[in-house]
Image (cartoon, rainbow, N blue to C red; front, top):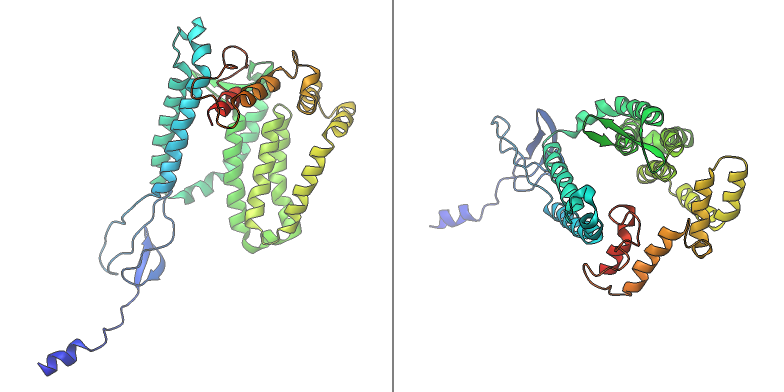
Amino acid sequence: MAGKKRRKNRPAPAQQAVPVRRGNEQVRYVQPGRPASYPGAGQAYEQPVAQEGKKRKPRHFYDYSLLFIIIFLTVFGLVMIYSASSYTAQLSSKYNGNSAYFMQRQGGIALGGFIFMLIISKMDYHWLYRLAVPSYILSHILMVIVTLVGREVNGKKRWLDIGPIGFQPSEFAKIALIIMLAAVITKLGGKINQWAVMGKVFLLAVAIGAIVAANNLSTGIILVGIGFVMLFVACKVKWPFFLAGGGALGILMTAGPLGKFLLNIHVLKPYQYNRIEAWLNPELDPEGKSFQILQGLYAIGSGGLMGQGLGESIQKLGFLPESQDSGVGGPAGLFV
């Protein structure tokens, strides 16, 4: 008995580190019982294999908190689209009086996107590296094509039709730019903190942003913003970005005179300058260029702090243009 007690009190032998693998590649070692901490495909993570010699399929699980947020925002958005568009769709013969037309269309798109998201999450994201340069070049080509032969909507050629499917190349350009910048920043490593290298990488965003801005100013600004944010995250030195943010605020404060100057030298088009004027002084032309802004303000302001309730918006009853698209913020403001 005494011998058994002594054996029980002996310290346990040190546990050997277990190799963690991603496919055929050994990534790191962890102690048994501790989960691997690196991301695998998509939002999935892999557990360590039990032994070096045995083959075992990695177990996948998802970041359920992120998945819940995605589903919640999608469902909430569909409800807001129905609330904002049901009146317009019901009265339009174009949609056969189907009040849920816009919600059903967007729901189908969301379902397709969700399935595509699950498929992508099972793939090794490293294959996107090979698509970085081709997709970036293709985005430039598509923007030139849409300018020449694109479908005109509300006076602007922003849509390309491929059979029954229509899409905006500017949306593809956003994804292509993100992949391209991620590939370049990863390849550069610590060199990204050098001023010259940082500027050259930012020019990738400026180049495609300038082409898009010629036809769609707001999306061009978004593309440049994508480059700005990705560099901000990648670089150790942060003060230039804060300085640039302060400069952007200064531009907003002088938007009126600056916009007038850019109009006079033919950098801005008249309709673009009219948007700046409508933003600064919406009450000057309530029936013209400021109509949509004022209707959106009426929609949000009439709801107060708590809103009028779901489906109780007044401005969506024919007053707010494009209430299911760019004008959805007004009726949604009444609810939230």
